[in-house]
Image 1 (cartoon, rainbow, N blue to C red):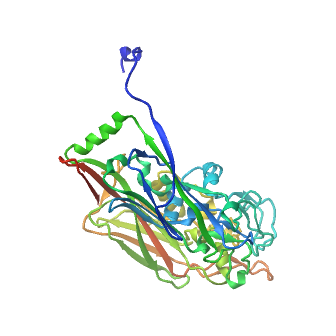
Image 2 (cartoon, one colour):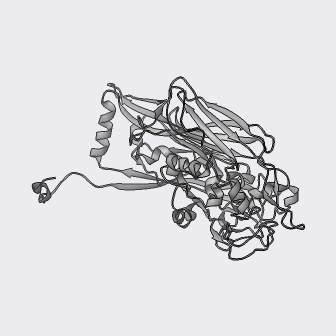
Image 3 (tube, rainbow, N blue to C red):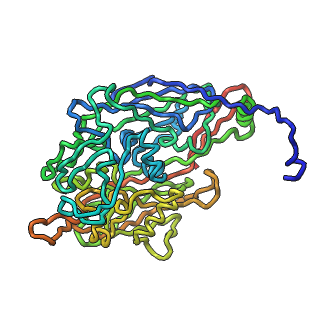
Length: 492
């Protein structure tokens, strides 16, 4: 910039006025757990638009609350964005994907102080200053702050004193607070740009939301304390219904010049392209293993002839028997870790880690940070589940934090700040994931004859594995000479 430009005080008469039109939409089609909304094709869609709903308990016992880990986000099972008959984006298990990629990559203050008002997540921690009442409670451990969290989980080994501190669910919608989830957390395609809905005036635009029907996966019930019988403060399936499901949509009305420029793009050769990263959902199962024996498992992810940005692996061990109470804080929103495990990825026939599989917990955590673009913002015992951390009892073993959120990830971006062309193109070979673990059985303390408690539950059960594979997806809008619109959605 030269001196004449710096001292140019002439008035720029170009339009710079933006307006926001907010509408509260009711679903056009609905059932108990599925709701479909139709959007107006007149302007840009803002990512801060909100999905609104109220969870309602089936009775007035007052013992239930959405889990404190991810709150209302845990209630959403799947979301779909459609333009006409084209499925532009559909994400299964969106509660897990959004919790990892959108909630817990934010600073802790934003997670609870800001988003806590919207999502009703309220999990806070402190460091114990003395020996607690639980058999495994020691000085200096990371534990749940039972005073300031949404739920007082009580004594770590038997939940004595458990109580709900905030947002207890009542039997009527009027007795409960409304939850609001920004659409940008559920539809990652909205985070790159304001979506120009006015390009699709010849199509119907729908967003379909599917809620989780199994309340045990997302809702706590502090009366479920029969740990020996397999209870773990989880509500029974069917205990929660959903009411007042609406969408608060912000339409951005930009100057007509901007909208006209976008429309002109659709008339050019090749049309107007909207590219984004679409998380594919791939399910696998790792068979049960023999305790203290190394097990090797290989998965093949069929992403042939697609551009991949990341691979994210989540795992869950079975919940059964008297040790299930280790899951009482995160419930089914957890991502279990194994104390001794390693991973190698083979892409296009070449091993990613040339020095050998990654097994060090710090390096595994760093790979998660590379994939997310910033650190996974969780307290240390949630991710670190190595033998040293287990033996040191960094968190009370029976509380339910240790090793309960340990995703494994691979970043395949090439450094280019673009969606299309910013990932790695996969040729004729599927992505191979070579995973090894040496799980232990239940590890029991022998410190005190009267207090034989588990330092760590068994890790050798079968694991349900979900992969989120981020691939480039392109929606192309082309205006034909006769004025008709042609929309094509494809993966790269």
